[in-house]
Length: 240
Image 1 (cartoon, rainbow, N blue to C red):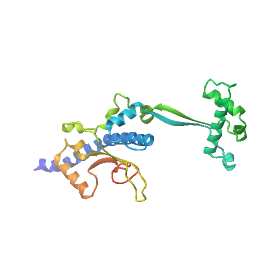
Image 2 (cartoon, rainbow, N blue to C red; image 1 turned 60 degrees about the vertical axis):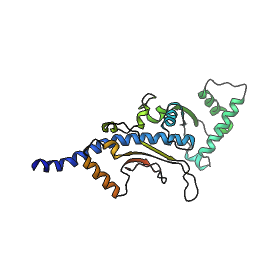
Image 3 (cartoon, rainbow, N blue to C red; image 1 turned 30 degrees about the vertical axis):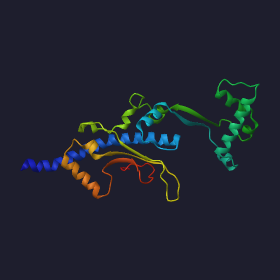
Image 4 (cartoon, rainbow, N blue to C red; image 1 turned 90 degrees about the vertical axis):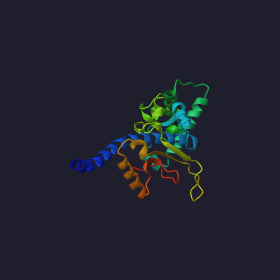
């Protein structure tokens, strides 16, 4: 009797402790997967449900980033100068300098040094030191800061701990690139899911049944997910 009483108390606790520990890693993979999908959407205007396509994108596509140097002062802003106007002035100055066949520049640093010192519009608007350059970076390095390489990036597609139930499973991935709002605006959406059974399937089965039943009655998804295939939700996770 004492054994059964103790088990009735410790079993739910052990299940919840294991669930909490595992969900930290599952959430991490879902966030990494969301990062990849959001960048793919940013560059292609849609999401993808193909892991082959997504992984090839991460391995080969460049990541464009805007490098900024210098900022506008309150005086410049009060005079009506905006970031957009300043960029246009700098682009025009660079184009003019590069089209001058009498001039040559070793690199961008030399080009900027010249226009800061010589271009009348740049000097008039006091844009010396103002610089905006779009550069191409390695996608994996830019998104994941060295955590993933071309050799291990496929790991973001697999649900952690799913192998403990006998088979390693991938996150369920679904997209709707033709979703339209009530105003008729097209908004591509995606959803990546990990059902409870996929990462808790080797734990106490009665506790797992209880968890699924409880979340079902609350009309919650029975697992962890990011995004929503039925309506835009800013790609939020259901734990956030």
